[in-house]
Length: 225
Image 1: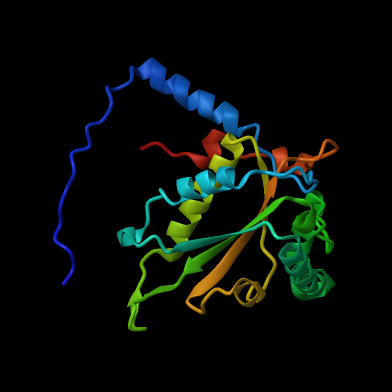
Image 2: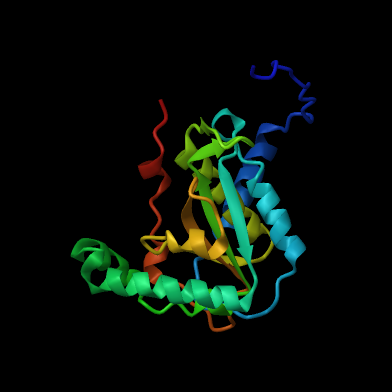
């Protein structure tokens, strides 16, 4: 039987004045506006507790039925990063050779992407995000997870925001297909690799594409009824 519903009093903090709420929102917007995706990383070490704190933040994300259908693998090993890079570049070669389709490849041109992914071995950490398509009980039986893509997407957003708040840069990398990550990282078939987050300090010569600064204005992404 499912556990009985129980509740805990929220005991929220004192409400903020309207002006303070607006200022807090604008300050956070300003902070996140300094976030840029880079491909040039320093090999400067990042302590594990920093990564753990950021992933713990991701774990606070809301999820369908609170099933938290995600798993994060933080890779620091140089050998493992090299294996991931080798496998990823094999997929990238096929993609840029035409597997991705002309329209997709053309859309990527202003962002300066290519087959070679040196950041996968230069950056101190790779965080591989897995979506748990279903749960497994101790006896091996399965149970359904709900709103998995939505839940994992929210958690990934939490993680990217936490990493930026901690002073780190990250790059979202999605080689296609990504099944090689299950075998390399020892994850079960119930999990689908969603993304590799390349994490670390940006190199002093890091750049970001002009095209990435073209964000839709608020009037295009918001409707008020």
